[in-house]
Length: 73
Image (cartoon, rainbow, N blue to C red; front, side, top):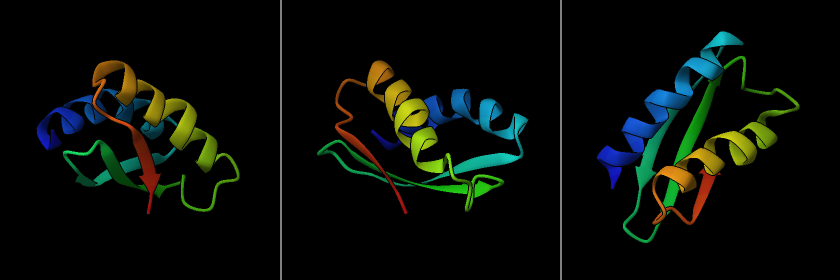
């Protein structure tokens, strides 16, 4: 699961980097819980939670149906 999540995050990363941000995978459990850390300009950004849910979580769920939730740490 972790490898698949990392591959999808590589697709998302350029979108975040365009605005000075980034994302780091912390963990991906077999139960479908993915923990990530937003970095760079994403830290403290008012839209960070929306980026996490509406971008990262949405794309991960589309690409990997086993993903149930993405949590920012």
